[in-house]
Image (tube, rainbow, N blue to C red; front, side):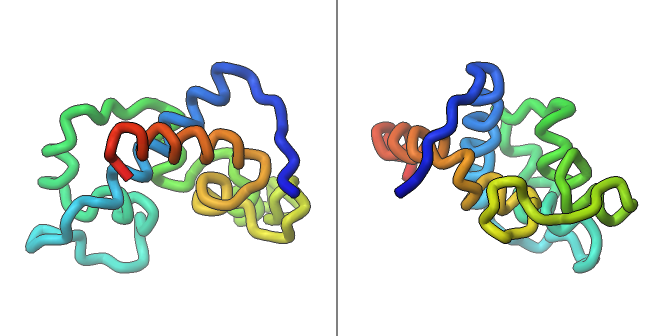
Length: 128
């Protein structure tokens, strides 16, 4: 049984925005202008495989929080542990998983209600 956690409206809207971004951006096509370096900026390349694909996404307006998610350089335990700013890289949700962007967006139980709402909204609008 999934535990539903209350969340502030602003935090919920931010998560919904990020989940919407994730669902839409992963559909970008890989092309001849795909980034070549394989070890740097991997999470950013998942969303924007090429600069040309990024420029075609006119509805995308980057801000401080979205950039943290795209680069995985934010207040994520996996990132903080690399600099000894956190004792552990495990998520606070007790799942035993490393707290990184993919975990928070795709599987963290804390954000299950937001994921369900997003999926429902995407299906309703024929986007999923």
